[in-house]
Image (cartoon, rainbow, N blue to C red; front, side, top):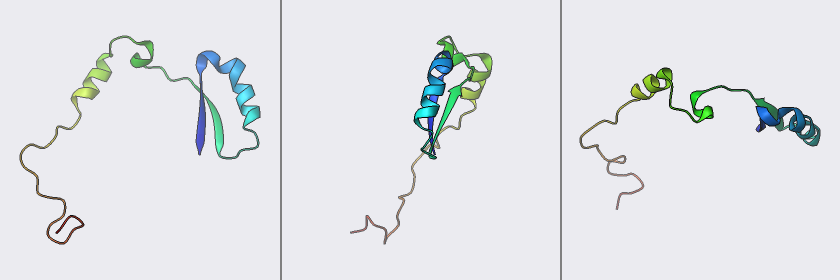
Length: 76
């Protein structure tokens, strides 16, 4: 599935033209982007976004064993 995403500001004038253009292609869906977020405005992140960033998993520290032990594709 392919999505042709139209920004909301261009929606009324572009949406109908794109929908008609891709009418014969069942793999394309034209949608209008109506999402609202702090990033779209270009402003600083909101408290919710900052909290989410803080919850990301940290990388495990230390040494990691090799992915292939002995007879893997990198064995000589």
